[in-house]
Length: 175
Image (cartoon, rainbow, N blue to C red; front, side):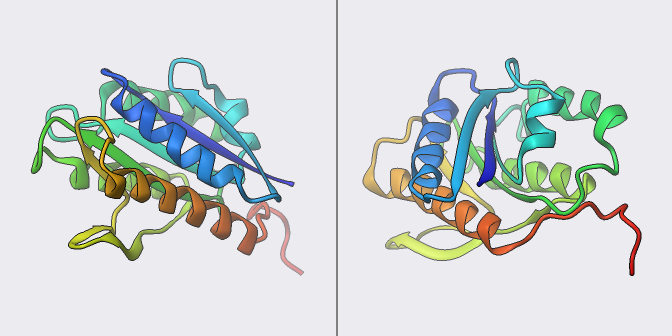
């Protein structure tokens, strides 16, 4: 059984709703155990136990929320170099179209890459002119079918990617 952590921050509840859609889709994979936690609930053990992570953040001043950034900044001393090779992806909610959600997703992916995560985007279109190259993005609350479908597709793909790759500790000796 593989473990996925859906880790989010949510100021208004919109990113939390996205997290739940991502989680529901990932949990449909019978080989996956999903845990959903806010950055206020989660700790280093949750991250260490996960084979894959979906990070979600509201846009804050055009970037990732300060709570999400603080979580990863403080995690560094305990997990730096110890969680290489896990799978990661991102999602973000913004106040309006053009509010910075794609940049926020890229910031989340950059955080994960700094910890050695293998990150991915999705080339699929879930509706006409609506894709999630950098992650699922929504302006406001996810209400429209295409917005919900983007979250679902992200969860499905995260579960697929986690099942596809064997996670190993990169600090183990090479034979």
